[in-house]
Image (cartoon, rainbow, N blue to C red; front, side, top):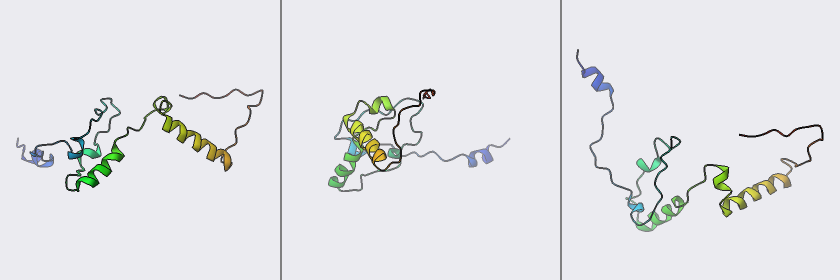
Length: 113
């Protein structure tokens, strides 16, 4: 049996040598998460800033410097996220998107996961 048909259906693997992004060379950055929730195709594998002037690379790197929390328990440890959550709740209360009220005496609050 010929494998020519099977081989033609498989994507070609690049022989190009992979290098870390230039904007990471001057910074200490945390390792990528090794959990099963990690992104299979991170954008950093497909986007390069090497063609941009250094000052633009620095500007873009400033957006990538912070790690966004992935859970409430992580967010509650960061003062910036606490402030953002409080501002969001305040805005929802001010425009009456919701109103916080006491639970009726004959009702039981629902839980969460």
